[in-house]
Image (cartoon, rainbow, N blue to C red):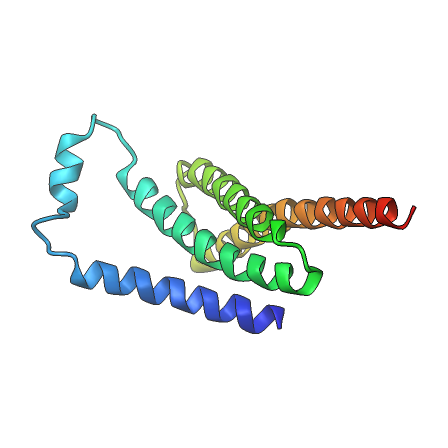
Length: 150
């Protein structure tokens, strides 16, 4: 169930973002107008990508959290998992922002290698945060059940 829920939530998040981009009137959200109102050197593109990442983390975190709550029979899983997804998304965004400041030069093979290594770094960061949250949740659950049995 984990893979279908995760895939479905990701697709829903991306469709919602795409629909929002198409339906919001251009006069309401004008990137050039926003860019002009910000201080010079403000990383507007990074902020836009961060908002997309946070939106996906919220939708996927809620869907996966609801599945965990159902499987583990603990309602607190939704909030914990949502929090872990948001922390993971923020960490990945910070690391991505730092790496984005470095110029990418070289051949197509070099760019592909950089892209793949960045993707791997992002996956490891995200997995570390959500994995730690899952271990903490599982330990907390066993402590509670041990107290109930005593």
